[in-house]
Image (cartoon, rainbow, N blue to C red; front, top):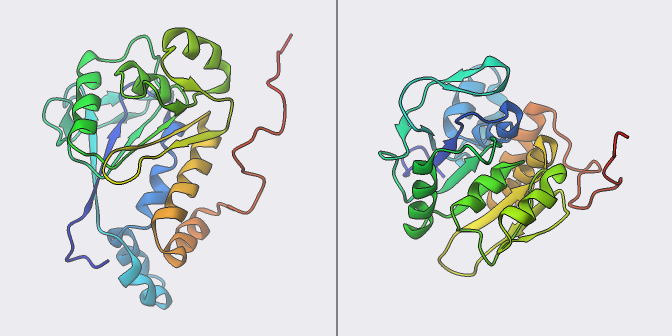
Length: 231
C-alpha cells in the first residue's frame, strides 16, 4: 500500500484501562507508512519495504475530550468522544477496564460500529467483558482475563467463553471479526497473529524485529499451565 491510499482507521478505547493491554497497538503502528518513513531517515536500507507499509490513522476514543486516565497514572488525550467517533472503522482496539463501570455511551458506540461495518474488534483482558456488555458478542466465542472467566460466564451467559489465550470468531463476507484475548501478554500474541494474517510478512517481520517480539516462541492459543490459586 502507498501513502496515497486511504489510511486504515484504528479506533482505540482507552478510558480507565490497563496500560499494557494496549501494547499491541505499537505492533500495528510499526507497520504504518508514517513510522516506516521515520525509520528510513535513520536506516535507509529498509526503503524497499516502504511500498508494503500501510498508512494509518489512530483515533483515541473516550467519553470526553479531557485527558483519559489509564493505570500507573498515565493520561491520554482523546481525539474523539464515543458520540463523535466514526463508526465504520477498520479496527477497534479495546483494553481492559473494570467491566462493571464502563461508560454507557461506549456500549452504544460499539453496537453502532458493528452495525456500520467495522471490520475487526480486538479486545484484551477484561476488554472482552466490556465488548460483551454491549451485546455484540451474544452467540459468539470469546475469552477474557483467565481469572475473570467464571465471572464473565455469569454476567454474560449468551457468550461462549473459552479458556484460551486468545479466541478468534470470524465471519465470512461482510461483518465484524472478533478477536479477544486473556491478559496483556496474551493480547500481544493475539495482535501478532492478527497482523500476520492481514499484512505482508516482510513488513510484519520488520515491525516485530523493531519491538524485539519473537512470534516463534511459546505463544500459542493454549495455556500451558493451570491457573494458580495463590492459596
